Length: 446
Image (cartoon, rainbow, N blue to C red; front, side, top):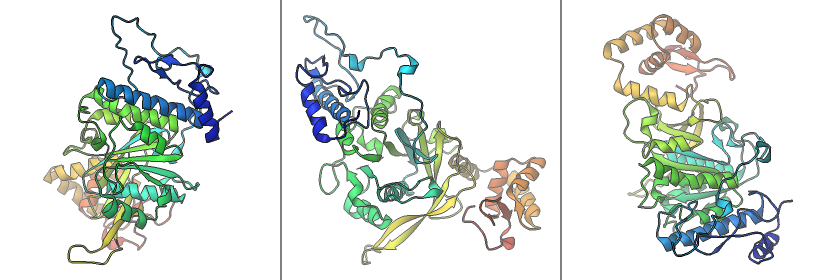
């Protein structure tokens, strides 16, 4: 039986503090530490208000202990140091692992998605991309859909009731940047919660020290966005070190698992010039290892003002094509000499023909070059092959392979000769053609 009444949850929490309540354990500091779950459950139930209250008490107690011993913040670390003059207390059972029979653990269940094949629930996702390309604008687009309950099948978002989103913002000003963008995107501000110090949106929290605040804000939320995650780390924690990086990410994994929310952390890519996207993670490769899914944002190399966003790494689903968005200005304020008064918003253009990882590799290869002689040869071959009219993309790939050209090479050549991709019927095959042979059904996809 689940606890669904806040008053009932408070009564149970009050009872557990007494000798007649649930069993408690002595913390190393001598305090009475609450159990990991309410008396009605043998394990933590994220749908139970009582369990949530117990979890908040644990976090608060651990925060106080960290402040007292002035150690590296870690809400899931237990200080087992005890004075040699005192008998060593038994380690609290709730923090220690034990052996379970497999049938005693939770039953198998399918993966739940906030956006199918793109953003899983109860998981940590990491979004990365170069500075200033529109990553934050994309999160605004997503927040608008979630807070209003509007479906967007093209991005895997089904119709659902409007849900709460929690924002932790460190880069953009609330009044002049974030709020105008939310309003232009159509977000329901009643379902948006912002974790900050002051009413102007300033004063970002520090994690994991302030994890209990986020937990409280996320009680009925489905998405937490931390933009940008690196700005919320304590100064004495270096995520360049693999162990410290894992310790910084682990509290978010615990929060996502216990609450069922989707946690989206954002960050920047470094100046990696090669085609291996793994080397582009700006802070440490441990981020990629720990996150269940990573989202890569990058500018479209063929069209200014277009953003390409899609999964880069996932261990939950098969690879999917990236999505393309155009950034367009919307006139909101009166124009002045200092500002045109516009606010940007994203418009979905459709699916790309390749994954985000392939886009990254193609852009790197195009920038670094295949060699002028090789480029001329394949460019001339593709121009001649398409000179007779529109050809199925798969036929182009097969013909290129027969002539000794790889699929990636021919795709880069397509961009250089400005060939077009179109899909007369959807669903249906893609066709490539030279500009003179387009039929008017050209897709925005290149």
